[in-house]
Length: 564
Image (tube, rainbow, N blue to C red; front, side):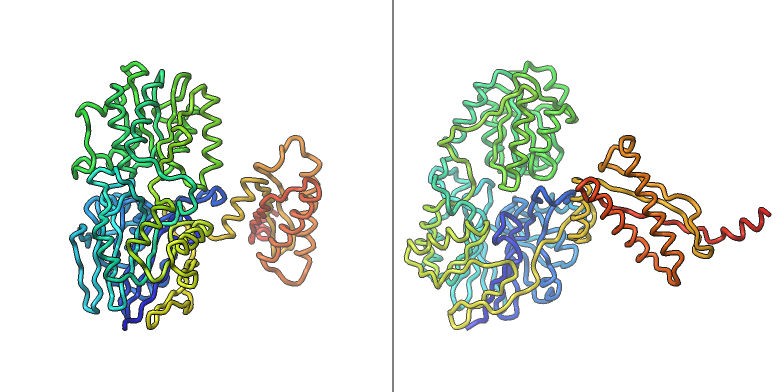
């Protein structure tokens, strides 16, 4: 029997960053390579990607990267991995095209073209007896598939993001017959989408959601601004159709959105009900407000920031006004809930309205409890490893497995980095590998750590306090200063006494240190930081970042001699 290991590098106990390793003997198969958008406390961070250390250390054993669909949480980190490891990438037609767009827009320069297009009929055989195939699944984007990795010990099935919708259009339909066939052949382990595993409400059909979107557009007295995610192709299709039915023209605000729509149109994954439906900025400005629809997707996957700019009058194209309706067409992730509430408040302040689907209608691209139980009954897996969700969602899926007769001992809620081994058909935890979050900030990948984030947080909350002076080490004297400045800490003109005392404290520390026998730049700066931090906290109960700037004039004595 083969030696099988499953290792999550991302995608468990978190919403996003999907990346799973399946090892069969010496061969490594990578399933998805996604990113995650940062929480509010990751100040200045653009995206979060998995730690690829284990893959870098074992790059010669990697057979390929296999993708389930074209959303950022499944393909967004691919360029950062391909920069370090050049291995074949497999995905459906649209998934590969969207992966290329993400690669072009990433902060790394990747020269790579080893992509392979697959479909639900594709079967890939490897030398060690492993066979990989794909099953059509329903999601909010066409060409979504589950990945089936077949071994002599049974199959490992990874669903990616999915849901079941009996009214789905052919392009989005799940292949239930294939799921049944795979289940009959024997499934060793199932890795299934958990994001809605504890939902008490079933997903509404996409037909019902589409009709409600039309109603929202009909009831809007003025412009409609739709906030969506650019890669949610199904929702974009519904919006375009609803705009056409309500006699509105569509203006696209972002270049990335235009690229995704162009790509989907060329591949027949998206259709325009009217070739003149999408117009440019000059045309949209000539139309009456009740014939206008503005589609905003945002620069980093979440359109909320762009909506805030519209509400404040700072957006490059659109300023919200009375009579506007803002409709959130996709459900934001949990990390964005606070930002979403702030955004809605700003919209109301701009005298616009927030439109929403009725409370009994749920729009989601992820499996509900009934979907998951049906999936388990079709596949009949021996073991369940819940993935793609926070801890409580993963735990909810293990509870669902009990309802369909899978024992608790055959389920495991993993942590990123766990090595889940299968020996003689038995599952056990055999160790762990390096795993965690790598932060991407601009062109920097992994160069931002906890210390930098802590400084950013302090700067945002308590500001910065700078002490500047020039010394002569040779003469052991302060030549100029100290001068103190602050930004975001206190109002300088109203804090004269505190600033003067701060200068005296710095002067005292430096003169005492210069009188000593030894000199170390780091030690001197640390003494200044400690003294100022203690004093400033006593005075204000705040802890700004204290930054000593010490310059040296080594030729001071010679300059004075020359003057004489």
